[in-house]
Length: 461
Image (cartoon, rainbow, N blue to C red; front, side, top):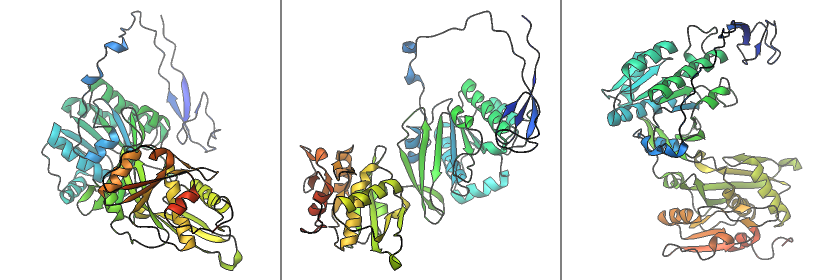
């Protein structure tokens, strides 16, 4: 059967829009002179022989052994380690520590499993060596390649067969036979496809570093995130020393796990006990502060939730400022305190903060926000030995959450004596010796339990 002749098509370098003819202006992103010609590959006839198929039940998943990176927090987010033939994409703000973390991981991986090929397409070998000296990286099996041609990278990896391939970054490599500068949508898509093909055919795991745009999302075509097996984000504030590694996609594990690191002079250091670290600067006995027991994946985490309430100046529109807590959920909690508990917050400025730069998005933080705001408004401190958790509904009820036992055990381990929790989580549940649990059904009951809501206050019960 004769194949059809190749047809010329045009693709936009800005958004990837394809057209059968040249256009001066892209109909999708409205960019001028952005369409470049692309030679479409001629279609090939289907093979005469049928491909071999296998029963899924005959495939043994235990044959794919994970390899630890030597960094427990990174292994936690990956789902237990690096899977052979997998492609992982890591993104983050400039200067957040992506290259630092991966150079440390490459060093420990090489010591455990063998050779690692670190491709630095953005830097020279000498710049990487300077960073390695600062981090104390001296693995003999860690090899560095300063190259931006994706075909050279693939050929080198096929010849050397490293145990792990790291490419920093995917936006700076390009294919010589594809039109467009490095970082364009066409180049990013094609370079990622060739590296993914390398991983599938050779079993070499590949980790790609990706840039982010102004909105904080990975730059490039969305097909890049679909083509990889896992998408990780390294997050954190520049003025704080903590960094959080999260998984937005993971074909080999959970997306709820979080890795915590601390930026120090010698690189990123793991935080094995983040609860103790986040609470070490806490000022106990002050109004407007309470400790919340949260869950980040399978890890319990104690976080201090702070609130400040004051009169709105000049009788204007009150401010609602939230940091580290979901703004929409905080607004719901304030409405419940106003309507169901009778606290006059409509004319007050309210500020809520999760201390330590933590992002507490779990619904179980609702009860902590409610108690902190009420404590700040009524100027009544909450017992510093108490932790709380629970989701707040629109009728003022406190709903059950998951993993109550792990939250209680973490609180008892750090010396807390009492836990205020949803009543549905409290029934018949064993507690550590010397630890007390109080189950509450409503927000008002929780306020009375922690003595932050004096009897007679409020009219709506």
